[in-house]
Image (tube, rainbow, N blue to C red; front, side, top):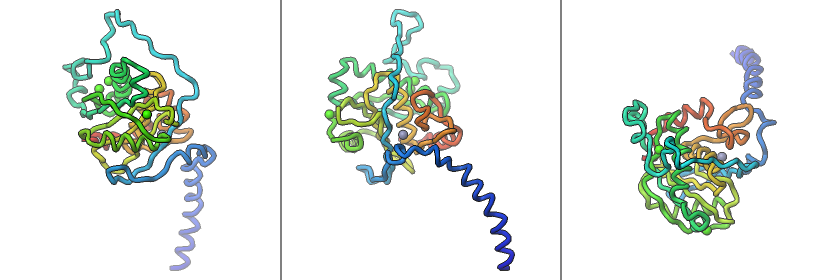
Length: 259
Ligand SMILES: [Ca+2]
Ligand SMILES: [Ca+2]
Ligand SMILES: [Ca+2]
Ligand SMILES: [Zn+2]
């Protein structure tokens, strides 16, 4: 019996070691990324991980829309249901209510903050709609006074101040000088009903990218590392609008969250 176990161990060990080497590309794990997350408890008692994500390295060119064009559909009113009333996908879509919360610095910077954030949220959700049939529907725009010495303090501040909003994704947008990240979010292990994230003002394009990534954290996604091509990998987070297959499966399995 003992001999048998020994032999088994001998046969199993090499492939186990090999699998370890393949599964963990340790050279790809950036130590900066490793220290950018910590475990904590959110203001509702959920055990969560918080990821503090960096801003974009190279500023993107902002999109330009011709509001006189017959193709321009506006940012405010149109959602997928109204846009494609006969679309089977729209009928199947899972609606997740979104509460858009802008801090005092953000509102001071942009007098058109509501339409700007409508554009950001509705563009970010196109990926979720395309890949998961999750449709974010903005239920309201809220003013918030952000307080805190860094991004994680400001995330906690949002969760406290906006904690009485109904279930949904509660998306904070900040131009507070103390917000020292591109975005930050709680990573939940089970449906928290309310998911909180805060994105820094990085213009329109980069904030759209950051918001997709932070919402991915809310759905429970952690980071990916090279060579995995996923917007949860910092190499791609400001460049692509889709997840890898394992994060696809995770988010799809949680499409009933935040309700
Ligand atoms: Ca949309
Ligand atoms: Ca939508
Ligand atoms: Ca503030
Ligand atoms: Zn992240």
